[in-house]
Length: 496
Image (cartoon, rainbow, N blue to C red; front, side, top):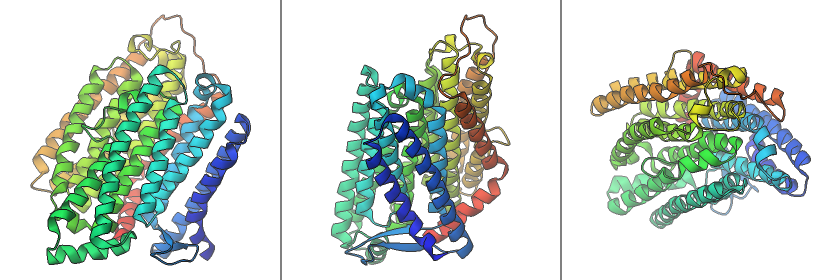
């Protein structure tokens, strides 16, 4: 069992080396290596989750056996292992579902580069999840940014290059603010290891010393990660980045990349600053307000769209708002709802983007709503998958989205100061979600004589498997939510 303590470090290094090896392979070999890699990652992180659940405690792995401050640390608990496992599963299914577009939309001599970027993106996500060192986290934030930017622009069209440039500008702004915050925090505490920083911050907070600089530092890191995760109003790069990149890129970016930054913020709240200290700074109130605004304005923008990919993209802005609303409540119940919604939104949004591939294929490649009429009859698998994802986003019982909204409502009721605005915006956002998602479902199930034929190029079995498994994952979150909630709360307890 002790060998499992090596698995988090091994999982990060495997992704790093797989990306290097893939750079010298042809497309098919790189794809095969990527599949083997993610399968191995699923096994390693499943073992880590089992180990931390059975032992009931987190463990620290010291890289190279050099203790801090000379060495680097990886920390694994229930929540880290659960999220790492979830990330690997969703990435695999996203790549399966978008395989056709990789073959058609990307030049043949560049497909291997796509898998190089995907491997390094997975490496950075796992590192953000497991690292116990803030500067290491910043390094992998930059690796994540570069890899994500490459996944957007690898199609080499005017719109994707423009989208990649906008994404890079906003991401670098967020990274710059995060780095400024880290530098100031190091100046205040003299540490980069999360546990050591937390002890120093607790002493500073208790003494009242450097109160203003500490608040500014926390604010810089929070705003930097909020920009990178597309919190309203820093979401302007989202529609083009998700709307014009390859389908698998859109699924990975919307469901995983933004969640990696949010999870890093949650780690900073609990393991670097301390939950009580972060709450006392009142920054939670700012996150709460912008989260509410994102829920409304993201949904209003989605309603106005006539492009199904951009509509799903604007929906992501609204869903990121849900997560920040939960964090902004400043309670354990709100944090539980926010973390559960990270899982729920990842499963639902990747399902929607994957299903969108089949619908547009069956409509002559068009993403316009008028051309999608009857698309669910021309590709039944994609139609059923998109309907399932839409019902989850609206919050129908049995699906994960229902549990998310229920948890948010329960958290709001327990928070008297924020109960009324949270419940009002939650209800209004649900109505707006129903308007644009149900409108789309009705459109694709409206019979029409369009002259289009159903078509799924590439490997239809992989596409079908991706859709079915993502629906099953969504239903598992919705029907067996108590086990997920228990794991999340157990993980949060280990954080503290």
